[in-house]
Length: 115
Image 1 (cartoon, rainbow, N blue to C red):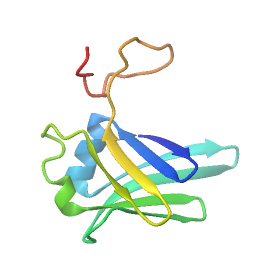
Image 2 (cartoon, one colour):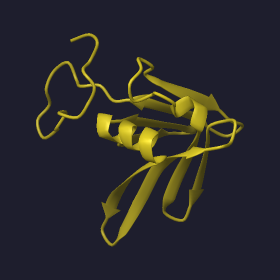
Image 3 (spheres, rainbow, N blue to C red):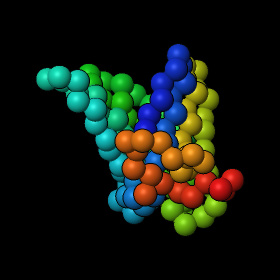
């Protein structure tokens, strides 16, 4: 799972196995090691009505309403977004690049529709 943070925008891009895990199990998590510390970030299904995000210690948790996740692993929707008072949140399926890049495994990414 990729996360991009710019100012007050948080964008997630999920590989196929991560989308499947989120839909079937209600959560998907990743982490990035920074020396002895780590940043943990993930998306979890919720009964809430809107997408929301919280930051606690070293963990970013984004909550997505369960109805948005129904069949997301098998349908054509690319993703969904939410504008809160503080943040713009965007969650998308991750596509393969049009030009291969060194040191990047794209085998579990979605086929780019422009390919």
